[in-house]
Length: 102
Image (cartoon, rainbow, N blue to C red; front, top):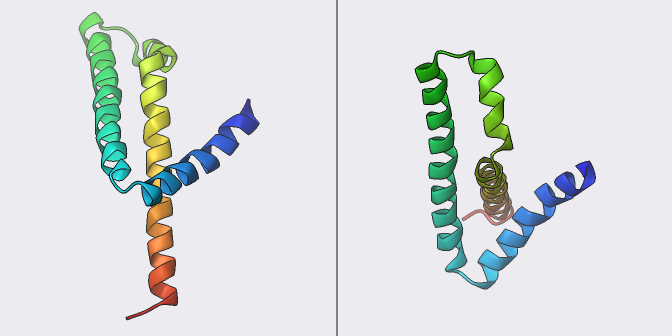
């Protein structure tokens, strides 16, 4: 499982970059998906913290339940892959600029 996570963190952003280079409009789709994932991720965290405050319970014990939420996991997974994808794009642009200065 660990190997799958490591390989996924390498190959999914590379695949996203390849798709974005092949089909230009996919970058917009990736960005909209990241915006949606950020909203889902943030709202799950906010509502979970609100429940802890409302119920006057201990944050450290109750907050771990959000880690089991599949929407939290999927949105976090996508945001992580999208962040690495953006870093990959930035790295390639900087390498290109460094090798071909104006």
